[in-house]
Amino acid sequence: MKYIYHENKKGAPVFVLLHGTGGTESDLVSLAELLNPEYNVLGIRGNVQENGMNRFFKRHGEGQYDWEDLEFRGNELFEFITEKSKEYDFKLEDVVLVGFSNGSNIAIQMMLKQPEVFKRAALFAPLYPADVAEKQDFSDVKVFLSLGKGDPVVPEAESERVIRLFEERDADTTVAWVNGHSLTQEVALEAKAWLNK
Image 1 (tube, rainbow, N blue to C red):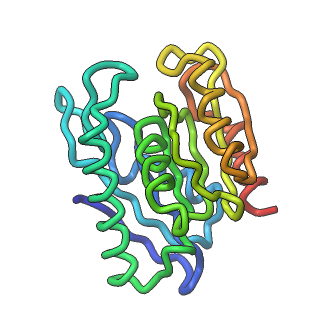
Image 2: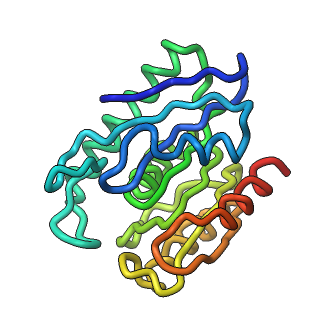
């Protein structure tokens, strides 16, 4: 997988940056700098192609996931992050997942599969269109969710489902709303306040 790693401060937490459809490993670097310039940065490029656009997993159409591929890619991405944690000497529990859209969605997949590992996440425009039967314990998970009113990609009912997914598992959940499928300066600043409080 293509990636970038920037060490800003030895031993600081690490942002794992997961871009949206068509993005690259560098897309969210400026967001990371805004959130906390001392944190280290691991930006990863999705290795699935959809009409020439980078993604983290396949889908059959807008909001129609290839669940088998998501499972496979989620495990593959987790293994990649684990590998990099050894290479660059950081702890997985010091990771903060930061995703936009497609990147947020695979972040949720990893959190559900590895509930004991990932403890903090800032997820912008997430969509996870399934009811998850298993009740993972997220009682020591802190998550910031940025959701869209009138989002053409994620219906509001699906945004509410994502909120429930975390709240029903006892995550410390902070919710912010924006207009549409976007990552605005305002909501980035809200995420910064959440992260650094």
